[in-house]
Image (cartoon, rainbow, N blue to C red):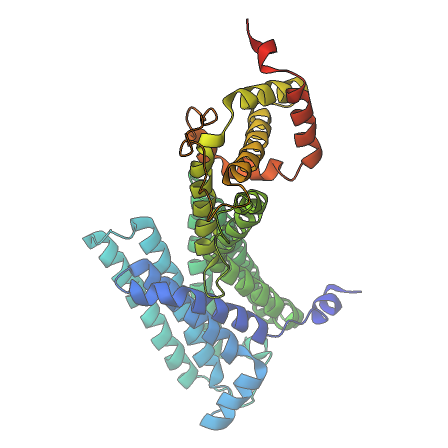
Length: 419
């Protein structure tokens, strides 16, 4: 199988990158609207919008429709070329805004942006002038670049738009590559920049394929497959990667935070159920419209409130014996601390229920300290426990380990610990 046959079968509809770019634009749109004065966000919005337009208009069916509606053969060519040139300008404007930062409104930055707008606006005007001077009567929706590669004025137009595109993508790729190498970048931002870098590198492959096919026509050879079969799928993959590069830092961080929230809510379930069993009512009820963050906060608050009420029932001596028992069973100090806390909380819940009694009028009606009896030893400082409730909750799932620690701790009486 030849390379031409291979790439000929590698068809990717241009509607796919258009849809992905549209999704990226929708995700970024709220930030663009709220922070419209930010030059960087405006450039990103313009870039995504123009990229969407390029792929929608470059689809062969769209090209045929534009030519049919206007009644001018191949007029879709300068239209698509103009959109692609405007996309190039947006790339450079984005890079200028990136380098200067959101607060940079210096004269040099504004001058650089004006220069980009002026140069690429001039290129767009030149594209339309050259098309008006060219003689291109036969409609070519797929292979116009190579079919008219030797036609006066159209030849110059093709070289002009490809040259402008190559320069913009080369500058953008080099600056993104340098930015990826800097320290202190968030993992999601670094991943997005890498996707952008690969996307713009593939844009250069697209330009090389187009220019190679055109140059072959000049030399009297036929390498049209580079333009018709290689360049379109390369451009599609490039657009998808560029869209992913803009989506990843925001969507990735959002999904990561949402996953961590749901995971934290699930990890707190064992301790939450144990706290509910202490007799303090139904606890934090599930609310359909509550966000995951709010549900997690309610669960954490309920657990901490119950633990603070259980402090008077904590047996400090039991906690120390359980900690020593966990160490003796080979657990690391951190895990031993969590296992000891789990044993102590379970015993405190049992003591709380016994203190309340079956005839209590409400939760905690007969708690120690209010019936003349002596309250159990209190935890010296519950701060560490309140801050590490997730670790304690996770070890509550290890029933066998907790029972082993409890049995070993019970084998050591308080008298045995006296010097």
